[in-house]
Image (tube, rainbow over all chains, first blue to last red; front, top):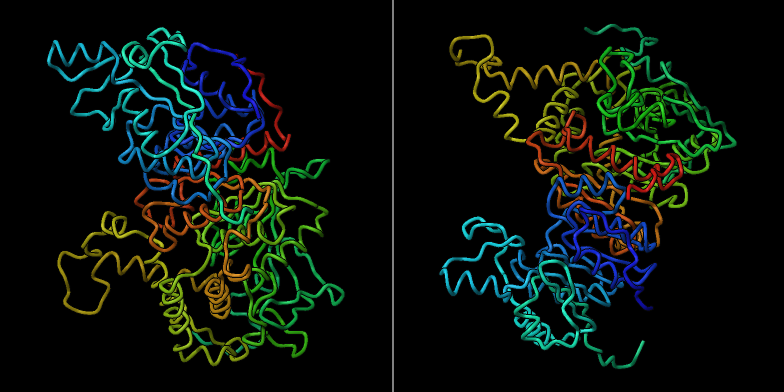
Length: 220
Length: 397
């Protein structure tokens, strides 16, 4: 199974990271999008990649929008309800711009890699220089285009930098298959750039992860 | 009140002469009951709305709840009230009678024209009463499948229903996965809980404690256990509403009086309301039928039929499911619906799940709840596209 290049229609409203995420998904695969919102990504995947697309969404409105589009979406909470899914049910489990809003990011990531063979995670990079600038120079909690909430009302309770995320991936013994970072214009940062450059100039990051190879006694 | 006229069905005429279409199944088509015994001959009374298309691919079966009936979207022949799901079924409604062919049949064990305890037992020439074999949810479903066969329909576009109707939906999807394109189990549970059984038992004991119940043989004796049935309905009706809704609607308000009378009159509005619910119910429902349908729910435990695994009931199912729960429903709680969703996911089925925010309790599934109606409309629209009933819209980009 190889993923095809991004050949999807980009409309004004399609978030750039969604297109990158979609580009990592192999055609015809089984996908669970956790925190699928109004189902934009699922619909792109279903219509353009023939994916068996499922979703989990916490908001009533989001679920209604998805169901109205004919998508299979379950109202639920990433922190709680992923535990209900059986092992290996999906080829990919996607968490797009949601990790930072979960209560237990590590547990969510581990569940994703239990349910799916691969996990795709996109998140805003808290190590970006504009964010560092706001905190270091202005002494204020950063408010940016991507993270537009004031500190007292933000749903984003577990923000991390790209370096932090890579540390977590190592901690849970997952493997990074592919990683991408984008600047504020959605332009990808050179692949051969060092991590520190990604962490400083990437506003968004997208990671394709794979669970560590298990030694399975007795096979099966 | 008591008239000793054995020919009179005491208001239960609909049980033998229904204002509905009737499908009769003779001795060549018996219904073998899950709990043992055979029902033959038997009849199913049903209503239809809309037109079956040439491909016979637009049929929807609606399954009614405990004390519901086939009159989904037309005036009730006994009460004159609008059909119980008029909010959802009709032209331009989510179950659009201009697009779909909608079938609803009275369950076996009911009292609106399908064979039940008030029907004549051909072996005795009298009403079956408790001689009717015990009825299960699966029996109701198998009987419906025979009706669907009779109507020449191979696969249903959708099977939908709430409460006991939702149990039938789940059983349909488990028994006939290839005949169910999409399914909407609403405000329901995969099995009856201990509390569910307990409430039903209170109702049955109220009926049986009525001296006019006469061991179930009240019709021949020209009486009806109206008091017992009314009490059963009153107790059950409390479980259909949330505490919040009751408090909002009635609080401690008094009924047409300035102060309490310090007596056992219906001083409180809520008492008056429940008494009215009880007394109107007995005009349209048969007490023995109430015993049978409550018992059918109590024996419902879908996982048990599949080696204790609910997931196995739906394994490999290609049906599209939309499970709906209401957050203030304490009769069939959202947790029960989540158990269904869990099993469907484990079985690899396509499932959507919505928990509707409302304070109206279990009965919310019968009411005009905008989020519920939007969900139903959306789900059916998506399923209709997948089924090819609606042309796919041109890509917007």
